[in-house]
Amino acid sequence: MAVLLVALAVGAAGTAVLASGPASAQATSIDSCTVIDEPGRYVLTQDVDQPGETESACIEIRASDVVLDGDGHVITGNGYYATGVGTNGSTGVENVSVVDITVRQSATNVRFENVTDGRAVNVTSEEPESAGAGVAVVESERVEIRDSDLGANMGSPAVRLRDVTHVAVENNALTDGYVTGIDAEQTNRSRIGENAFDIDGTPVTVSSGSGNAIANNMFEQRPAVAIAVGGQNNTVTGNDIETAEHGISVSGSGNTVADNDATRISGWAASAEGRNHRFVNNTFGGGDGIEQSGGALELAGGGHTVVSNDLRGVHGVFVQNATGPTTIRHNDVDAIYGVRVAETELCLPRRSGGAVVDVRANDFTVDDGDGQYYGVLNEDDRVVTATNNYWGAENGPSSPDGENVTDPVTGEAADGDGAPVSTGVHFDPWLPQEPSNQTAG
Image: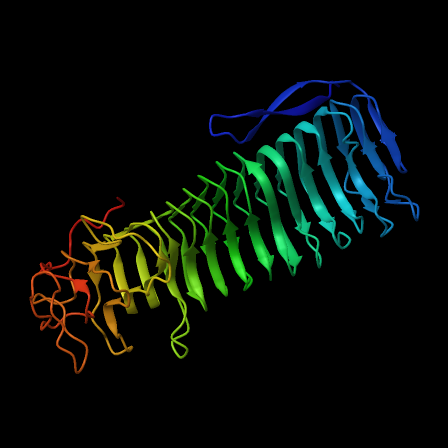
């Protein structure tokens, strides 16, 4: 019977997809640590213990067009510095698959280095040694890790990505980590999607790279930060963060955070620094009401856009040290501080033609007994433009107790029944009813 090797190609979306081609007809049996230096299909016939105090991989793949089928067997590492299963790295190989195998207690359990078109499917990775990784992909492209059970360890992520392009990490269960589930650096046009995380530290870290998608993942534990993304032009979409200290953190520039759900967050559901990030159609909520800290969204830097989100908690949006225009529009805001603009500590030139923070066409909920202090609180000496918002009452915003706030531009009094505004907020004119255009901008 003919045997097929499974290869990878790149689809239109830039992620790895399956293709197939002919291979040798005869499988080769393996019953001990070995070097694979010829193309073909290799099947593990028994569990293997790696010899002690060796830094060589137990099964080292040096050839292209190789399938290593573990057939459900286990490779146990020596707890030293060796790899369990991996490529040599010194010479590039293509079309390498590792399937249906358990690898445990190696420095790195499975390692793809200098690989084009690789797969790790139905792999169980357990207890990688400190400073190693469960599965590592280094200097490679078009590699997929899917349908696997990937354990992390103290100091060792379940998955480590370095200098890679078009990697797909999908449909996996990632567990047991105290630091990081997926640690990605210089990762480009790759996808981390449909995974379930049970990680205490940071389940997903993409510190650098561009064009990546972190999509539709489920976070079941209470991580310190569920998703941390740097780099440029990455997207964080459709993730469900059940509970966390902090939800989504973005830095770098031009990243998009859309359609995520993070509402049981003790700190910030989302935060951003850098430039030109977009937050669209998310449901965010969080904060500590006793400490008056945390909330839905914290922003630093400039050029950010916050559009069509549902923002709840202590702060709806907290803008700190704005270095450029920040636009907050078409959001539903139900928070103790709807929008809060902190005093800018940076020395910035005055802008002409508008304020740095622009808050318009939002729907602010009036205090329903949970202790709302402000719809918009401006602590900076620059005016916040907050016209054409609905403040929860037809007759506009109110003044905080004991204050008589007026619009710094028109002189209109904030004497309505809606959410309170502070001094330095340009609120006139306002909307007499909820805006009807609550759609993604």
